[in-house]
Length: 328
Image (cartoon, rainbow, N blue to C red; front, side, top):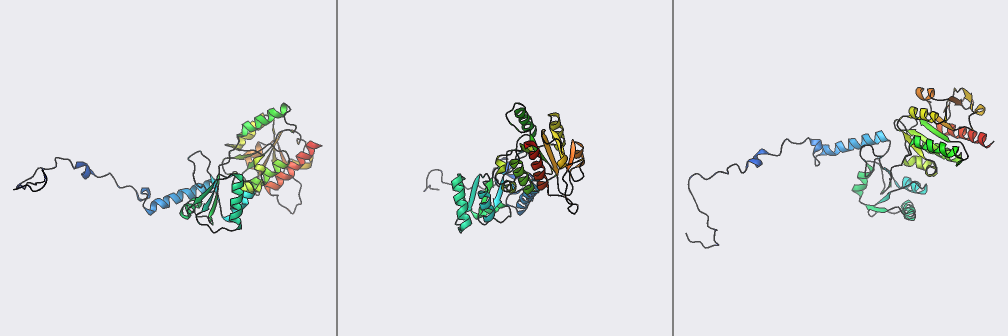
């Protein structure tokens, strides 16, 4: 047969059996192993459901939206403030922010205009973000085209804070005796914010919160504190009872606030000493172990028709009385 093409283009036709692959296709026949579970396949709807469940569980555990850039185990989560009213109020309150996310081609109103102005004045980065990404970041909450990314609060170490404050007082670097407020089972961030504000008003040196079953410094707490969270450090401790024992070893008197106290607030004689006030949640009050670790249980005299005071209100009244005694 003549070869009218390029050399090597002729195909020989041969009858009979041909040579096999010799095992060259064995790997292809072996496959890629067992089929992954539906929830582990990124393109499957079960995978998205699993991710949403994990985010919801994290949100319930931490009491806040993890938001973008969620940290791993042991890392504090970032928070996301969403919605035009919430964002502009957070910016007005001076809450620390990492970035302001604004939807592409957003319908600008007065709230968006003011948010952009405040963020620019404070040097907060402005991020133009697509609606699908904002939906993902908001994790189901209504964002109205704006979201403020809040960095994790940097908590102080409780024992370091107490030890350093006591040392400064003994050396005469601060005039007032150390004054702390510890929270036992309080989960409302507005209570925490109001307590931080009272601590700032009456020369408190710090607020102590447990890691478990307790509120943290969220955007809501920042806003309620009216900026006082910048001035008063908040320390997060692993075990409140152990911390209170260590405070007592440092020479700090632990005073619990409760309705059936050993001493009435006006008769308090330890106001001028180093003090840590401990307040429990409204209704439950102080836990049994915390009560046992207190040097005194102090009650605020109120009308018998009123069962109890809000935690932040009780702290504010007590800090005022301590401040009055110290100034006298």
